[in-house]
Length: 309
Length: 309
Image (cartoon, rainbow over all chains, first blue to last red; front, side, top):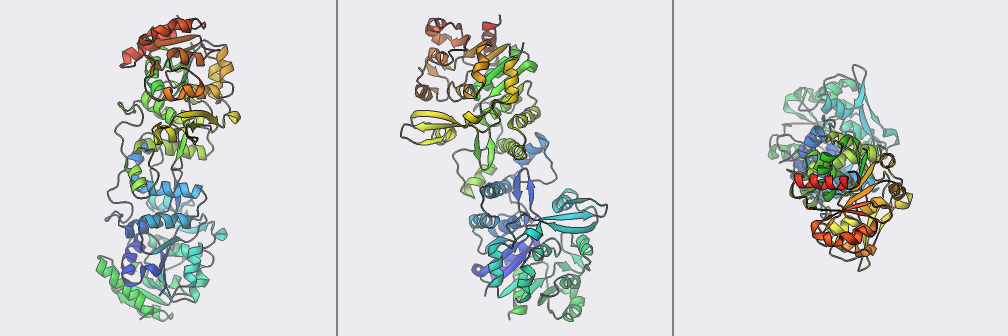
């Protein structure tokens, strides 16, 4: 069975640790969001790609869920202290090596897909990891107080302090679905939406031309990132209203209307189950808090078996 | 008195610590060699500019004479260990911050001169530091066994193992003397050649169009990098024969024929003094081994006072 997973960062990376126990990793392709990508100190940073790579490659900071374990910050300290460089986004030293490798290859004309493959190989990832597109796209946040900024400036720089009036994916009209992503979707027997932010992670991937129509004729199952009517982490509660969606398991499922076939929700949200089923979507109810690899594997199994028993 | 110093790396940097005690640093411009500049991991590295900056700014590794004190190598370890990046030239973490700042500014279209000024300001250098040119020039070594490589690959990568059949400065024909260097030379009351490699440091600066003719009508004093018929450090002994010069205090002075007015040699080379005087060059004889700041200051004073008593 060929499986494709659409993925954001931390939540997706954790979920994938379970998914690779349930499906054959050699036939799994993970398509990651690159709308959060940002250029910092001249380096191309791909937070979601790296969070997935570090998590599945065994190098992630375990408590934080992003960045490297046993990280050092000598370069960042110099950049700030000596050169007064902007300090709202801190790059660790180990992490920086990845950005240097990526940036150098991109400048040499290598596609982001090929760069990602090279980095994934270095981390011996058991599946294929591809960016959603090789083209530059950027999630721009429009705040309540009428400012526009890169998603990372809002999220990391301002700690999501401002409300969100709207958001858009700059460059997406000219973006092409990455070749590996297109091929994988065409051959997918199952597509899994990881428990990622439905607006700035999964929602971003869905905006890339060619994704939605490919999902329509595939079995698509998703895992709700909402637990008990709240976000597990992140800021979906600020972003869902900006796209007119309800902050609930049912509200997120509704965003995927038209292609979603199965939806796994937390036991705390079982009250939403009937409402979702009424839209023609199969519902699985289980523990979605990924507190251990066993729980995570069981969650992934529930998702897969909801459509492929 | 306006003073201009032509400088390479370690030897020049040490000498400048004395020179700033002897002349007014506010009226001193240091023109540094950039023929050794190299792109590593996509970053623009300027070894001589940085050695001067770190030494005069108080951040140099004291024993090594290059690189940063209290340096760490987390990024380099990751680049090699994780990504298999070339490891013949190691960039420390603190040092890397400088290359990141430089590379980002250059990519933004800022000239190397302006970048250098910005970095020098961060280190509170008391004089003006300028690259010899803002244009890309590269010293290429042609080895005895008929290979061509960047100077750093020969010097750092191969530890200068091969003999040198020849060398050239790639790009120099199209290079323009940096504006700050041109202006400083035009207003110089004294030009000092630091005790740097006469072939790949001072010799490189001399090749930039406009330097030699500007030196002809200025008082020019140099400090010999040869002590007791040998190089103090570096590889001038391998390089001098490649440009047809004798490895001696007199041999180096001869390379500067046509514009050299004064030459400071070590007491160990006093046997060369008459031969040099016979070419019309004033000679100072003193201790040129810069073992302490006092000796270095005395050496700088000898050089300056040889032409400006």
